[in-house]
Image (cartoon, rainbow, N blue to C red; front, side, top):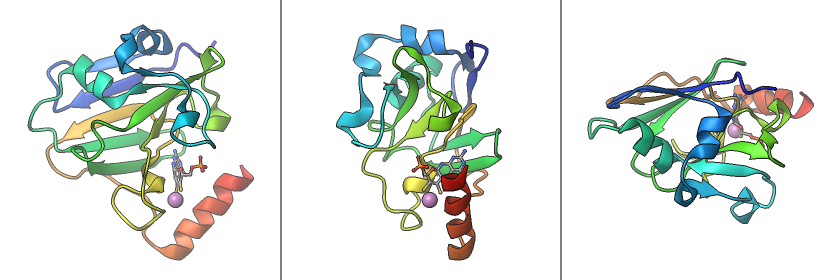
Length: 162
Ligand SMILES: Nc1nc2c(c(=O)[nH]1)N[C@H]1C(S)=C(S)[C@@H](COP(=O)(O)O)O[C@H]1N2
Ligand SMILES: [Mo]
């Protein structure tokens, strides 16, 4: 079982948390999204709304940016919180099981209606896979999304051959 996997949520919050698959599944129904294909036909699985996670930790008013950290492949994004707080979600379950790493699991951040890669702070590249740490910050935090077209093209090539 990959139930060992934890997602840490900390920074500008009242109570830092480490949540597991079971913790996410236990969040109340109003914060759950069954079948994310309603937002993007290419995506599958169930998600919990970012707003549900923010409630859990008690996001402070000082939280202006959300940092999405993927330790597995050292990929990080930091984006403004306000535009995504009521629409982003974390996909964590497929067919009742933890989301497979092949699909970006165990926890995959997802923003519906993201901008195309490289066109905005809130772009497709910010849909961070293998997220193990969500960090709320007052200022923009660490972000290593490629900002150079060649580097970005290489990253996509690597992802699609993985
Ligand atoms: N951990 C991690 N997340 C990542 C990436 C990555 O290389 N590592 N690439 C990003 C980029 S550049 C894009 S465009 C999307 C692609 O998601 P997809 O492979 O599901 O289409 O994932 C984003 N999330
Ligand atoms: Mo991207």
